[in-house]
Length: 244
Image (cartoon, rainbow, N blue to C red):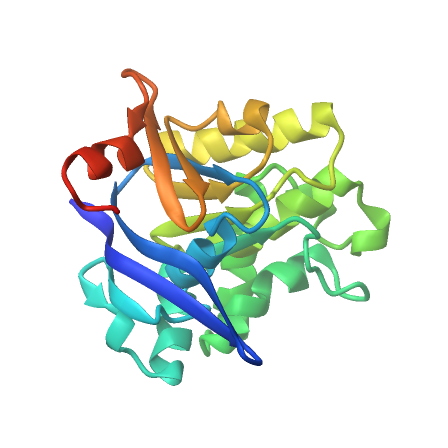
């Protein structure tokens, strides 16, 4: 079953008298349990797509369904609800509250969901155990290494039991050894059934995924599966008369 269904997604930003076409009609499906890396140069459209997939932004046109819900038709409050219920976010800079313990940082999404304190703490402890940091539950971010902070961020992303993890350059602030540790963790989560979509500009990080989407000029130009050759989508679309 497709967890993500995108049909002809387009996004245009208006900046004064200038229109910037960030996405030019992107169609794709991501199945439940996939591990997908999104790559592309700055300005290629990958971050715009990630924002739309994460219900942080709406397309100018086109359709986006997440687990069957028509996201493109939702109001802001409904978008916030679907983000909290279905999506866990992991960012490059961790985004942890500095004066708050690891446990309390992981609890935050549950506070927004109205979960009672006892259940919040138990679920946060379970999430920290999943990422191997239960013994650091009472440490603040300043008392943790960069890799440990990212593990706390991943635990926070997991605590609401989402269907989808969206990771935006999750290893961008880490050294190579710590990056490998974080990617091992994401790969293990994927092997247990979690759908993982990450944005990266690093080929060695993208190599962890079982599928790689490459963006250029607001379009998906390659869809590479681990067990098959690259699919050059732009060439296929030109041949089919879909692109001028």
